[in-house]
Length: 129
Image (cartoon, rainbow, N blue to C red; front, side, top):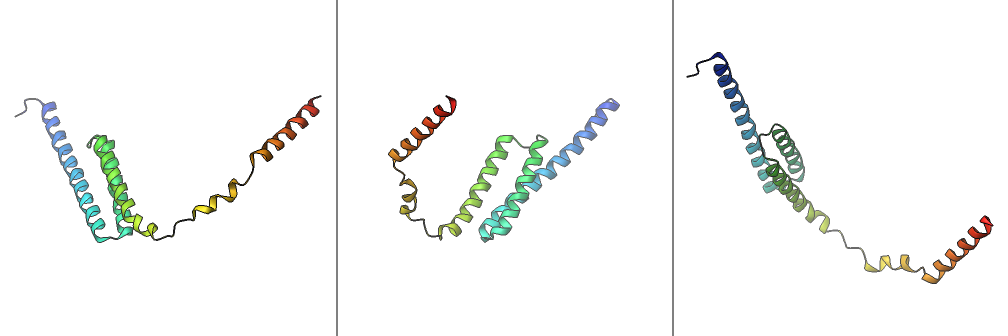
């Protein structure tokens, strides 16, 4: 048992902080389970909102030093990969652009560009003289 008033107060503060930290860690675990459930259900809207809430809660826990920054980064990266994987099948159905589309843009000959450059150089020297 504590012998001084300050030690008793410190014990009260520690208990309060431990309770708050336990609540935050439990909330993180709950959000992680919700993200997993939303990913399994293939509901992109629910997955996006759940991931957003989870990342927000992770950031808040990290701001107070409750969760290590590397753990936060790892979980954020995994959430981003999960969102990208769920969104990829939707964009994969679009047809690929033909390879010949870029060819007309490259039709300018190098000789034409050097002749144009020579004309600008001549006008620049005439203007300065």
